[in-house]
Length: 129
Image 1 (cartoon, rainbow, N blue to C red):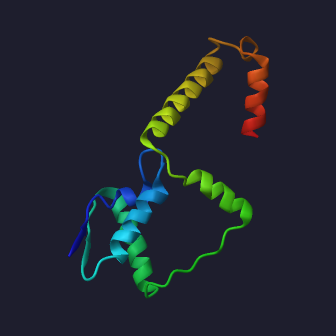
Image 2: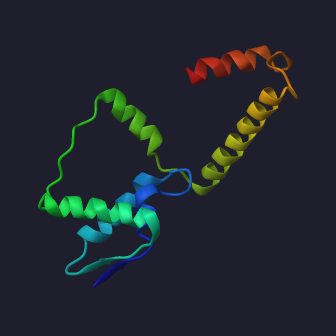
Image 3: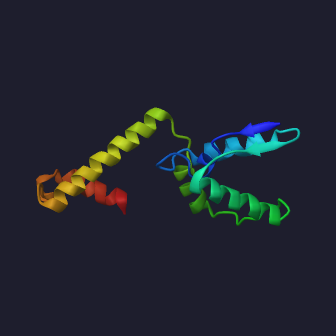
């Protein structure tokens, strides 16, 4: 018997959705390597959504159907679902906090876009488009 605990995390990964591919792969590996019975245990709304996925698969007799993504979509998926280490997750969170703070300061009028380095602002515009 294989017990998979905290399966609810397999629905959305961590709070930023980072490492979702890794977590879902762990679930798949745990299920497919079992020799007999598997118990998948989790809680909350995320577990309910995961359970709905299981029920959908069961209704399709466990046959997976999907559209193969285009090369452009594959490139985006590799970025979104890349394997991110803990130190990188912290760096991403810190950067997100910094950007959020800058946006709040600009919106509140505490700083003006003209106060910022023009080259950096232009580069950010290019990156975000």
